[in-house]
Structures are given as structure tokens and as C-alpha cells.
Image (cartoon, rainbow, N blue to C red; front, side, top):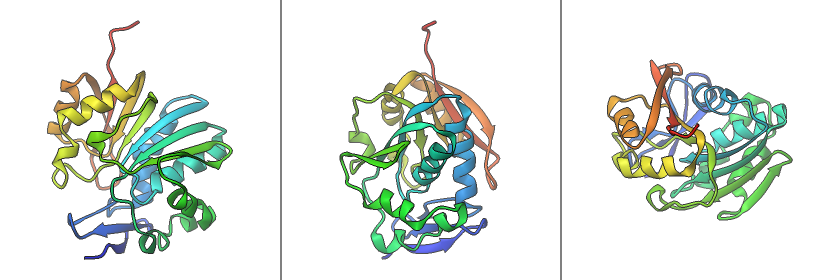
Length: 222
């Protein structure tokens, strides 16, 4: 069964994955959700001039695209790492309309998808991208991250990506003042994060979701 292009409520595209019966983004608006969860409450929540960011679930490239755009606009230097075991095929990503809606050239999205895997790629003067085709369970990095965008498919569809072992790995990959943001605010997920040491902050969610989660790396260091 092939992926299917769908249009979400804000006019932006998403992709329906028939194998797991779920779309890559919220039906209430792909761009609106990404801007709220990962840009407003992720990248722009901290006043820094440079970031190391890890995205779990590179998917359509939307989060990376919006982050690269903000990097240029705000003069922020970003070292961005994305994990994706099953890259979106070309016949799907070339149809996506994200760049039309955010005022970027189509080539900006294509660069993200078509640059090399397993190595650093300069996307623009402010944004470097490293994509890793690997499962989250097997992912390791020498880089310590300021922010993790946790954008895996839902716990109902991929429960193995929301367990204690995974969140312990995410905790260890963060700098001591780092944090993780995700669209998910389910009680079991928050309890699992808390069990490995995260301090949980519940925030207002994007359209269609009452809440989202920010998980700060908890440390006793002063």
C-alpha cells in the first residue's frame, strides 16, 4: 500500500501512512502544529544564538524546514540531527506544499530530503543537517543536544518508541539544561518521562489538542 497525500485544516499537506493507519501530522493543521510545538515552545522558547537539535522522526522534513527558516530569520546557528528509519519516498515529498505556504522556494525542502545521509550537510549559512537512517533504539551520538523534537508516531501506533529505555536514552543525549518537546501529553507518557528524571511541564496544545509536553532535564547541579 502506498502513502497518500492529504490536506490538513490549515491547507498544508500531510502524508497518510496506510501501514500504521496514521498521518504524519495533525489533521487540524500540519504547519500550525509544528510551529506551535517545535518552534514556539521549542526553538524560540530559549534565548540562545546557537543550538544542537535532535529530531526524532524526520518524516516529511517540515520541522527541519521551519527550523532552518527561523535560523535565517533570527541569525541562529543550528546543528540539526534527524533520525528516520523509513525515509519518505521522493514521489511523496515532491508533492508537499509546505514551502508555498511559508514563503520559501521549493528547493529548500528538496535540499533537506536529497542531501546525503550519515554526514553533515550545510543547508544554509545558519543550518547544518545530519540525517541518520537508524532506529531510535539503536541511535547513539557524541553530540549533546539543547533540544529534542520528539515527533514519533503516536504511542498507540508505535508503543516501543515511548518506553522508559527510549526516554532514558533521550535524557542522556541532552545537555544538563536541555529539554524535550512533544505533541503528546498522555498521562502514561508523562509518567514514563518522569521516571527517568525529566521534570514535566504541561503547556497549551496546538489546535485539536488541549495540551502538549515539555520535559526538562532534571539535575541537582547548581
